[in-house]
Image (tube, rainbow, N blue to C red; front, side, top):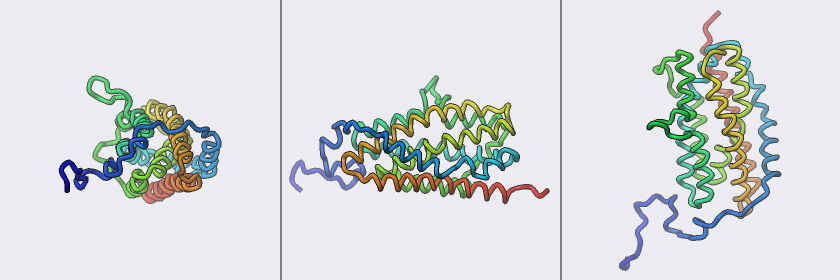
Length: 257
């Protein structure tokens, strides 16, 4: 090694310091029309028909199923916030990274008096407390572990991260939370469900839009549109599979009548 030659062996490879390309890191991504791509992913989401999933009918009549959703959403929401930050950290272009950090900021909201008291995880904590669910009963179960695993497997890939964060979570969550809202109105209308659900529904529509816009930018630079739509389809299927598994777990845990 000559004097001044760099050594990259101990540095994270996702910093891409060993293949330094100034323009890739600093140049703005091209402006694009993402209307058609948004239409395609919305069609995929509608085709999944998540609101008709039998879990929601069960949770609307059995409090134990709704409480199960809350406990696993606590696990999922906190891990999701972390994984968005992890995906952002591995995105080398500053403009693309800013989009993902904006989503992460939306999950955490502003710090007030040293705490993130409007963050989505904390709003969900308030919901848990209002339902008198013991903290000790909240633990990761198989359905949410499998779901988080599928998400985590894709966050290091730009298109995969966008699809699993923006489509398999932010976009498909909107109709999911509207169904969950109906469940709360039927089962626990006095609980603190509205702050959490409303904050998510408002933010997630915008987060999904930003992710589709970012995907369109990558596609304009040579990424495969078909590959992205395939990943979006997989991400939506992952969410449906989660509810399949959660439904099976809720039914298995039902008290004998």
